[in-house]
View 1 (cartoon, rainbow over the protein chains, first blue to last red):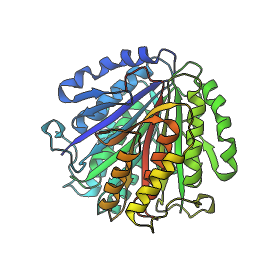
View 2 (tube, chains in turn purple, blue):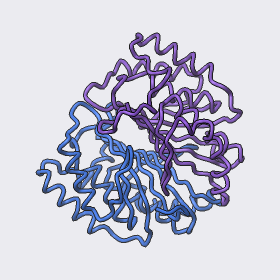
View 3 (cartoon, rainbow over the protein chains, first blue to last red):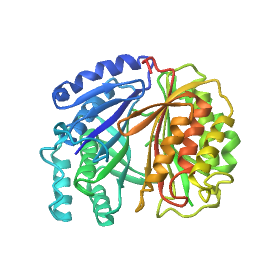
Length: 202
Length: 202
């Protein structure tokens, strides 16, 4: 299966280039497990979901450590038809959808609890799209039930779900929603926005 | 049918609040045709697609006129199950999918040609998701064919399509892709990123 993300980092400061360059080192521990390429709109990360979400988390937390208002946007995809299967995308641990739904919910909650703290509080919103023939509504409802128990659920908004809390738990929650629910080999995508240090009330 | 967008504007400058506030007046001509509400992550616009895309275009062009590197992100949706039908969302002109595919392609190309110039050149990328049972691959291929003839097609990327050109034509092209293809009353969403004045080569 092919998996990856188009990610963009937006530091709201005159020194946005400096903040981005200062944060890129956070990707170094993951570079041998991903392919990375950049244009003027986004950076493509191709790799397993085990690596994508921690890499996005560490990049974003490094940028947010500048104290500036920073936003990360990501378009994440797995199982896209027409993309070649790629060994670099094979996850080691998640997507165990042979397990019953309730067991997967509990595993997802445990994964969120075990995720490391980062010291940054963030707001996030995301849309999860399960594409193809079978909409798996039981899976979607199971995922929503997991989100509400995740400890970082904030609210349902039009077209997306809002989370707020410790960055580690927020990224882990989105990771688990993406990997543990829906068809194991199906085409699933995310539209994610994560924000820190916004001057607007959350 | 319900339609709307969660939009966010990211000016990469210390004065991001000033740039955003300075651009908001561009929404005034559309406000009586939309409902608007804002939190720390995005602004929800609920209205017909006839209004959503011109409103997003004018807001973004007004922000980009600052000369700063600015990005607009939008999550756009029509036909989302569970959302109430709403008269404010009824389009006056587009979504004429009773017409044959080839006629719709020609109508979409004509609409792009007729769109007003804005004076801003932008890069954009978007993902179009047709949700539900029938994937309408003929519709998708028809849409891709339209995009390649639109005059602003740049390249196919992983998970999205990149456009580059005059902002009027870019927004009109995304609008036409969203409205003229796929099931008329189906659930269709977009994940859009538009960028101006990036220091990175396009």
